[in-house]
Amino acid sequence: QRAREAPPPPPPPPPRPPRLATVRAILGFVPFVFVMAIKVSMHNLCAATAASLGGAPAAAHTALMAVAWLCFTFGDVGSSLAQAFLPAFASEEHPPPAAAAATAEEGSAAADGRSPLVQFVYPRRPSPPEAAPRTSFDMAAAWPTLRQLLRCTATISTVVVGLAATLLTAGAGQISSDPAVREQMRAVLPLMAATLSTHGTAITLEGVLLAQKDFAGLAATYTAVGLSCAALLALVRRSGAGLLGVWGVYVWYCLLRVVLFAGRGFGWRALKPTPQAAEAAPALG
Image (cartoon, rainbow, N blue to C red; front, side):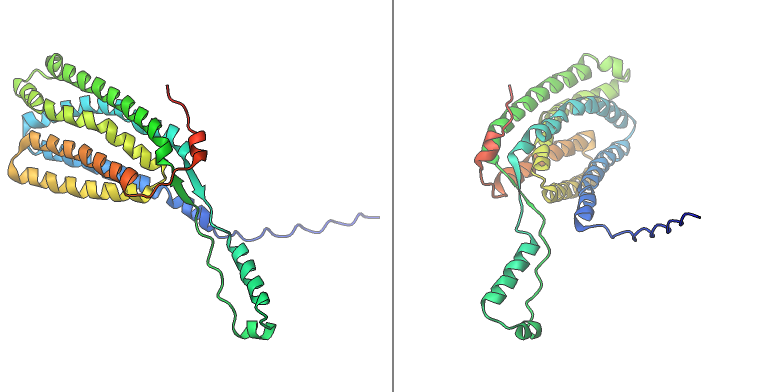
């Protein structure tokens, strides 16, 4: 006797549309892409402006940027440190779920004595969708750790300024044999030192906003920074400020980020201290 054949398996269910949380997680990468686009555009505009100045300024800018990128790498450590130590002071506040709110509404409807017919004719409005959790940050508890991070950043900035000064003075002959190029490099050195001394602080404060998950503030800050730098570079082209004008824009680029990031992280957001975050604070040596 033949064994009965097993029925074919049921077809797989159709794919479900992505949930709101999944879409929100994917869109969370958009601010990072936008910020990187602003940074790359800033450096490209500066390079294009320097190239339009002629041979010696363009060559000097290339040499200066080679040294600057080496120094920027050390300053970028501040953002990594902030993102490593400061998330311990952030916490998420979850609103009550929508299902619980709907159950409470149903219970209140039954409690006020409304009959099923009245509830059918005059239904209650549906509950709103569940809101996204809100991130709060305990700046009061995080300040000792952040102060240590800023001290570390200041030390790194001091070292890279000394490194850049050494390379562009004692090592200038190894970078370029053209006296005109070396003269341009020496003239721009003070502005480059100002840029490097503020770059680390700007990146560290940017890491504070990332630790706070303040992506809207990050995007708004870089929008203002990008527009102002583009306007200043256009002014440099028209005014004939030369390579000094280009590096003056770099100083503005770093200083403006320090001011806006500090204002956003410390003064423009209401931050309530929580004892839980203080107990979870990581120790820095």
